[in-house]
Length: 92
Image (cartoon, rainbow, N blue to C red; front, side, top):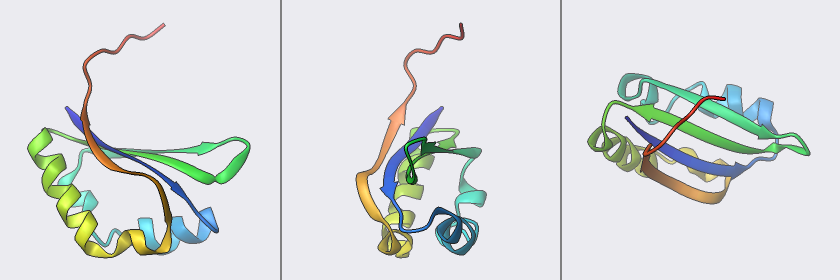
């Protein structure tokens, strides 16, 4: 499994979630297996997103679509979307 990870600073989480993310301008739902959005408990407009894919190739292809879609124009990108692969995981 591969993921696309990013961190954004938003003006208004609720408006962004309903207006941009849920609208899915880059076609995330067709390309990915799922996503997770995490919010900074001290600043709910500071968010971390992980979008999961079957393969690194699928994640890279989506990354290209995302970057050309214009979807990131309404956010402050803190950490550029990056394709990563999980190398270790353990549940406690």
